[in-house]
Length: 277
Image (cartoon, rainbow, N blue to C red; front, side, top):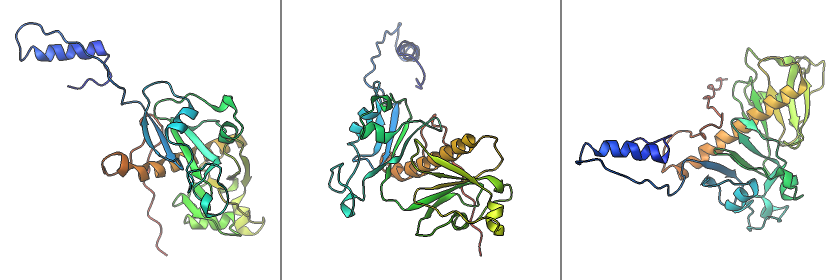
């Protein structure tokens, strides 16, 4: 019997009704809730024990981080930094929470290093918490490009080269306001660049840094903050999909496909096939 969405009383009534088909008289049942398994939070990335955790009671962000063992390091110590022993450290500047497809304004540096209680929010079911790797050398090219994806960073990489690494822009791209986002996700720096002027040589190309986000818009927007909002939400949704894909075989008994949190607002669009040169 499907009791999804029913209260305990409604579930008991349904079972009593079904039992009248097999026994005489009017059955009386008592239904007790043992645990809540339908409410979950996703804790992925550089945690000691990443995974999908049941949320049986109200839970703060710090409680969830503690449940997943805190940030991962090679030695298991959160304060190791630099060199090979620190390669698994979480990058708090680029860690984030997604709720219903939107980036929440939580500053992990202020929370974990500064002890700011205002950042210790209560989580909701299907919240997606991600600890980014500290020493990842990538830039992200998203939006109206042939294949949105992370592009490996190397010294001297420019915006035009990164876009070429994503197989270029598509026909409907709005090229005069390409957005470059840099710095902490909680306090990002953002500029818009006329890509046509860069390609034609009228403007110098933009040198990039690791973790930069290049967003090629499909349509113009009136305000700079709108570019930043769309770029960041596209970025965190893309990372969430990739992280969820990697953990799926370990959390769903080897089921195939991509499983995204219900209500997260994250959708999956298969990337187009790269052009053959």
